[in-house]
Length: 519
Image: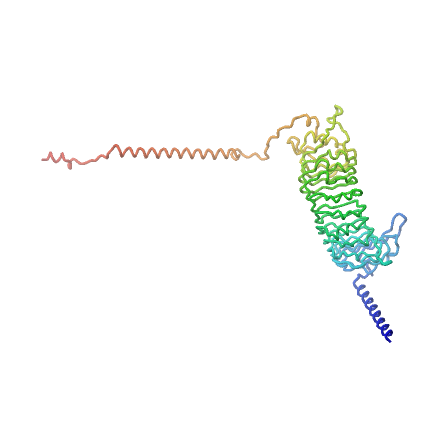
């Protein structure tokens, strides 16, 4: 009897669970966008032809279509089960907010949901799309709490979840401030990751562990993430990182942990950081580096000798838009025999230094042409206040063939934009038109002060001062003369009272003599 009651209870429990599951599926289906007529709303492009070299691809573009949820399934015109095709699917520009599970397909999938106001993601969102290879979730409102490991898990098999085939993940322009330590455990194939423009600030231990667990990572973008340090633990397990972007952060020196990437690092972008000085320790021993960007540094005013001397594989060097950089040492580049492109435009550079002068070979040329930089094909010098002297002429002469022959300089970066600013008699002269004999044999001229506006004589400072002095002198002289006159008057008045008495007059009738005569 007891067993029968237990069986009845178990049956009721199972029925209740089945009812809840069925009800849940019904609610879940109601939250998805219906697929009927979706190709009338979205753009559907189907490609069925494929061969051994190129995969066919189909496009489902639902960008900015006022959708609110994920599609319930794929359009009927798509053959979802073929593994040798690619589907490009976009929901960008829709107010999705919560990313639900994607419809099932065995095809290679490229999915984009940018500007969707995403704040959360469903568990197992990519469970039925194991071959998703590119995922763009940039320009959303995702935080570290929304990025959970279970979101990216694959199908369950043999007591564990399988990994998805994700190759590229873009999480830039979100609100991510930390990462779960196990976030990438189901993304073992990930090669490209962007966390740019997220407020990561100081990397937490979990974030360092998560980034350090992506052993196959080749491209990492941590630019504009408010970072001030890169812990070395982050790079200890990454074996093949080729590109590192850390520009726009708060580094005051080049992080020393970057040296751990020496065997594989080929491109480093460290510009737009408040770094004031670069020296031979900044890029020490990065001998596989082919691209280096140190542009846009507002405080950079010193690039020491030896800064680039160890970069034997360097091909592209960008050092532009550094407003406090006034000198650049070309001697550091002479050993870089693979250098193809050099950009030192729009700085405050007045002088180029070259320790070893170029020897004269014959009488027909001012300075002999030798290929100091054998592979250099692009040089950008414009936007600097060049002081044109013999030393600058020697350097320009060694790369003049590049400035004159390269087609690139016939466009917006034409060499005529690089002009002398001083001395005054060469002002505005293109650097390629400098004359060696006159420049290197003539002593430097004194630069006369020629004002742009010549003021009238009476408005010049000297004239104004002289006029004021004249007025003061006249006033002083007048004051002195007035004092002298007053003193003389007082003296004369005193003399009149001391030596003379007033004359008294009387009539004859009243006088004493008249009285006597009458008697």
